[in-house]
Amino acid sequence: MSSRLPKQHSRGAAGRRATVAAGPESRPVSSASAWLGDDRLFTPLGHEPGYDYPLLVWLPDTTATATRKKPFDLGRVMKRVSLRNFVAVQPGIAVDSPAIGLEEAVWRSIERIRERIAIHPDRIFLVGQGGGGSDAFRIACRHPREFAGVISLGGLFPLDEALFSQLVDVRRLPMLLCCKRSSVLEQASHTDRTLRLFHAAGAALAMRIYPGVNDLSKSLLSKSILGDVNRWIMDEVCGTPTAVPSLSTP
Image 1: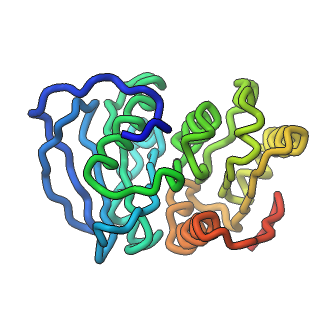
Image 2 (image 1 turned 45 degrees about the vertical axis):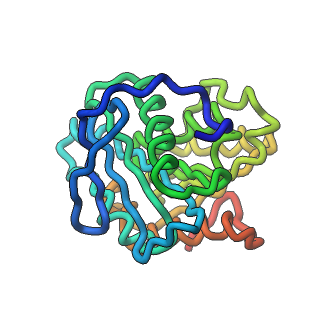
Image 3 (image 1 turned 135 degrees about the horizontal axis):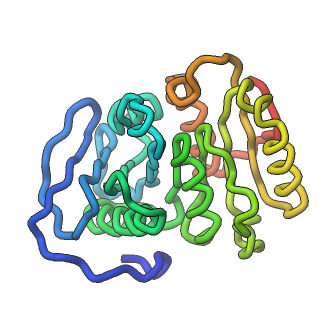
């Protein structure tokens, strides 16, 4: 494990099992670590063992179970993002786990993936949907040196939580917030406070607003929007200079 990652708890005994999702199908594999549930791993099509891949750590909507939404499908989502560009993992956590359980699951997932697959240490991205997007902001801002960027699909930035305490490092952390136009209008005060906070702190937040008033969580996992996620990450990975305004409408 790289020294860049926070110190982890010692590994537990083998015996638990995780699920590896490769596209639409998955298969069980043995796990040498203790887990809070079943991890899911996506490996890219035509995987090259000698190449250090970017890693996407996906945090699904934490309210999905309570509202009976369709379960998050890592394989299907990554097919819409890219079949070849990334390794991706969905940390396994118990449904009723507290916030600290989620953060611990993130570190354990990163550690386990890096023990098995070549991952570029400076290209680890957090991506969250809905409530998972807010969690992604929290974890990334608390550990800004460990991530290359953070993306929230519909999850609000957690204001009033002192997440900019490591301001120098947070300023170099690229962040992307994708949301629906209707939600921005409904939460105009929160949006205004968020933009003012980032402007005052000198931090980088790209905000992409999409038209439509249909189901927020479902539409933000559409092929077109996830295609934008792929392009944004690849711009960061490749160092492509792109001018993205704080507010934009495609």
